[in-house]
Amino acid sequence: MMAGGIFRQDNPYNTVMNRVGDITMLSLAWFVCSLPVVTIGVTTAAACEVAREMQEDRDNGIFKGFWRAIKRRFGTGMPLTLFLGVLIALVVAAIYALPIVLLATLPSAVMWVPLVWCIFGGGASAWAQRWLIRRAFDLQPQD
Image (tube, rainbow, N blue to C red):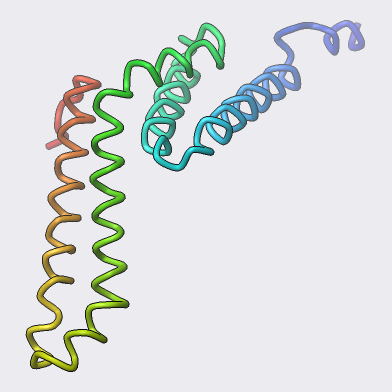
């Protein structure tokens, strides 16, 4: 009687291992599609969407859902990813290159102005991403 329960589809071990397999397939799809680094934002958004569908038991296949989510998110995800890439490049330039150049020509208080602008740009980008995500998923703000 006990041995019959081991081979059922809905026993706890099979349920957990099915979920582990789904997460592994999702991680593999994310890794392969993120190899061109410029698509990392789009693939991360798609992976989050598929993970949410898995949690809500609405998934109809990991790879099919992932590809559908990539196509849906590509239009908004790529500009945001490129904007963040430019912002990261500016921060790196502000941290490493600008102090060396500006130290010789400007007073030390002025040379950190580009870094401050990059920080404000990052805040604006985070706000824009939050707004776009809320709009994409029709989320209501929590009070």
